[in-house]
Structures are given as C-alpha cells and as structure tokens.
Length: 237
Image (tube, rainbow, N blue to C red):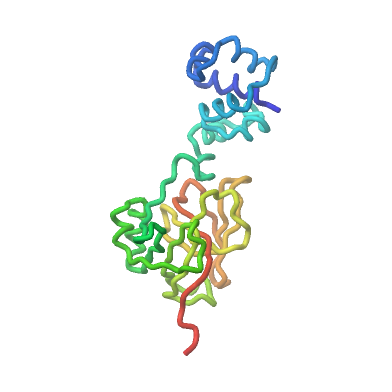
C-alpha cells in the first residue's frame, strides 16, 4: 500500500508543511509525521478525511504510487477529474418532479437538442421541456427521453424517442451497451459505447449502421451520460 508515501508526495506538491496540513486535518504534526513515515496507519475516519482533503479516492491513495505517474495524470487527479467521472462533488443534474414528488421524464425533442447542450444544467430550461411519467420504471432512478436524428442506430429509426437512465458513475459503463452521451463538441449522440476510461480516458462510440465509422471521445469532453432503457416508435405500418 502507498498511503504513507502518497500523503507526503501530495503534501509537498501543495508546498504545505506538516504543521499546516495537520491543522487542516484537525490533527497534530507528530501524528501526520507518523503516517508519512509509515510508523502508524491512520484510522478509517482520518483516512477518509485525507482522501477528501486531496479530493482523490481512498482506493487510489492506497493502491497507486502517485510519484510514479506522469505529471499529466497526477494533475488530472488533483483537478478532480476522477471525482467528475465517478459523479462525486462536481456534477449536478437539473430535474423536475410531479405533484407526488416523483421525478418526471423530460422529453428532449429534435428541436430542443441544440438548446439542451447549453441548458442541460439549467433548471429553468429543463422545467420548460415536455414531461411525462412511466409508472413501471423504478422511481428511485432518474430518466430522460431523447429524440434521435438520423439512421446511425438502425433498427431504431430516425425521429424515435429513446428513454434512458442517468449514469452517475461513468466507470461502470458496460462495453457494447447503448448510451446517450452529451458532449461539448457534438451535443447529443446515441451510440454503442466501449469504455476505455481506465486505460486512456476515452469512450469509443460505435454505430449499429456500419456506414458510420467508430470514433473516440475524450472523457473531458463529456457532460452527461444516459443508459438506454427503451425506445418509443411507430413500428407497424
């Protein structure tokens, strides 16, 4: 485990003395010194406090020698990218509820797609979208419906609405499943997704229609992810 060396490494990157960091953690310099020199292990409450202080997961602090990582990777961790990917602290989802205080399913039509890219976190914008409920879905989860455009995901047709479940922790995305991904560059995209976050901080986007070639999206470009649950279309002529 690398907790002791990681504490020292991260403290020095912040240019903090042991005394300054101990005060921030509501502890003593001698106690922090014992952690850094692996004389004593912090109790779980203190370990969690250290994790929150650096905004790096406890699992990462324990398992990975941060001093051996490239500067860019350490910088990502310090900027909170890991927390962003896992849905901690930084992402807030705007939503609406019905009179029973149950989340509505908001409908993002093709006309609203461009506005959604800018207003997805704006409660006023979201409240103005059409809303409905499906009582057979789990009311403990958040759903939203998006109208698709184009033929890249046949047999799901152009103009079909897909209802999707909000994905909080992106690291749990399963390869080959279908997701609506909101990106800074392309807006709303519906694809089969292959999760390469752990390896290269990327998602690989694949269409059902082989005419469209797969492409990669940097995870920093992603704003929201929704997992496909069902679609609503007029199938029979």
